[in-house]
Image (cartoon, rainbow, N blue to C red; front, side, top):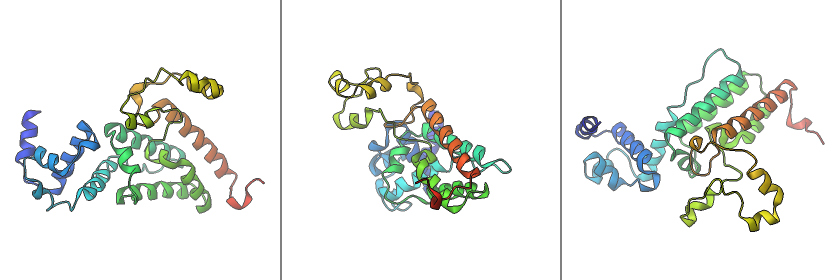
Length: 237
């Protein structure tokens, strides 16, 4: 491993080498610790050398996103839309598990990167090829939300506020008693099922079982609407 790292440090500097090093650094230490200075140090170059290949940190982050999104499995030909979409979404989730910093990086961007747009476009293309109207595909993409990219915000995830307080929540603690007393039904269901902590994609994201449970519910409901030739102009009153 040390020899491989040294070989990379001696390799000519290129955009690809910079991106691979940046992704590896973010994987290891988190996106918050990534800077042009420490990336340059990791590569064994002066910071100014990086700017010949990336204009600034924002461009670097966008390119890093596109690099990891490129790891999502490509469309599989000749299978039905439901299996195709499910497979690609779970592949996206596997990518996020390899790169836990990616959900926050993706969510924080005002404009999607080219690779994100290409991925979303291909998902819509799968729906359309599966017989979906443009109208239904539009609404389906809205309801799927960030789940299309392999993650979603967990309803009972206290870690959303943990980053602000610096305190890591105890997942087994449930609701604090004073809150549970006011909202007993929420407190009851919040602790009604066990969760696999090892399967969490990243801070603020649900676990694998919950993710697949919701994904399958959505896909089953979407399939029913598609078979009924649903349109927004025929919504129930």
